[in-house]
Picture 1 (cartoon, rainbow, N blue to C red):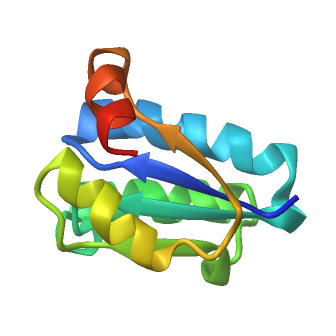
Picture 2: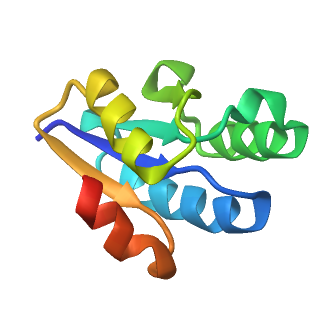
Picture 3: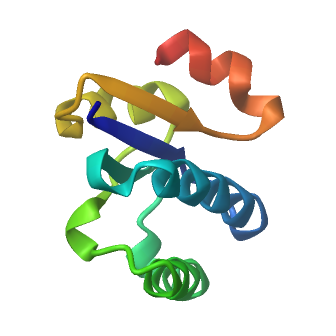
Length: 107
């Protein structure tokens, strides 16, 4: 089944953990999965961009399997803008434990 794995953006330390969690889900079914990073323009944050690029290269994740949403600044906006980009019937949300309740509220 086709699915999108939405990784909610945050500062680098938390983002690394979230993104690796998203990669783990992606690797379970790469043929049917797409990764979406939302909430932070990782291309403008050199350390996050290098991390994402290195991990995607290491796991041979093609760029067409990675989408970026850069406009949102809140969890509510994460959900709103992600909905416009998600083209699959199923989604997995990757966030931190302290953020789960808020993410559930909007997604």
